[in-house]
Length: 405
Image (cartoon, rainbow, N blue to C red; front, side, top):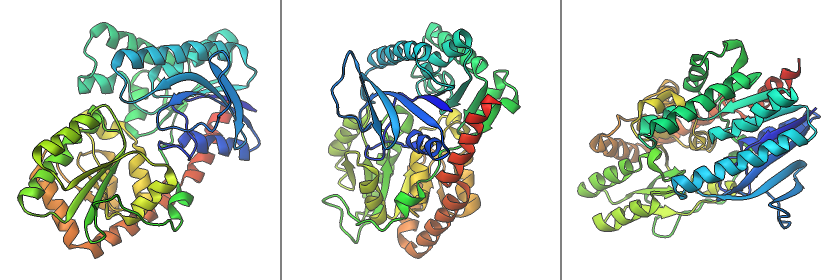
């Protein structure tokens, strides 16, 4: 069976972003299927192709995966209009591929929501089986965050969401809230499957050389955040906690933010302005370097803005990397992940928008490093037993290819 797989932000493990699509494609190959990934040029991502673009695209085979990469660059720092333009261009080119390529099943994964457009055309114009994977609920999340307020844009997005869901023969949700959100748009539960993000057990299970950025001593307590520095992440909560720790004179507790995003410059400016020399920044790194960094860290930070839509409607890669690396996790918002952390004793949950409680939790963690290591060990068990990527990938393949039946 040949799967035509659309993911605009695809990357191999050599990139500095999530590799869910790479692992799912590898599982398809291992199960005897063919797969062609269609993607754009995502900042931080590495598709593995280096040949020149010809008429706006290039093709090649990477680790057995056929890849079609459009010459459409995208960065989390791009403005709204530029991002929208890139999304629409990718969708338009994807539709042409969906109508012309030879394949058996079309699979598309968000974000963005426009990823579903080629599937809509394939379903209704070519009668192809279409499976749609939803990583975030749009337009619910941007509306809840206040990022998009124009009622016409929100209305158009809601219509596209409805059409995408109802055009798909099967759907996948990455969190309980996403599955519920799909069902609430009139999709029968039997057409929806939950397949959360998984843990890269093999990558983070190896003995990598631990390392820390310059300025962070081996004796320092190190809490790290790895991910996008954007509005949704609410990273001022980290700086608020750092300011409280600074006030208390706890200079041996360091906070490291790894990644990039639209608010990174503003965050760095605030650190300089407020003299927060207990906060450090580092550019994104590939999975191997990330595993080495996590091997030297004491705590992983699962941070999001205090938006109720996030509580059950997200499945962040960073959390699964943390527990795969055996790092205990501190979460600063309620929801399914905080519940999982508390139930399994693999980390700490603090109330949102409470710098004092956040700082208290970091101080307590620093004083009880033996207990913290035990939390990390429990997290690794959760990673292996509940979120092993290879097991989840096989379940995902069964669901995607089963659409042919």
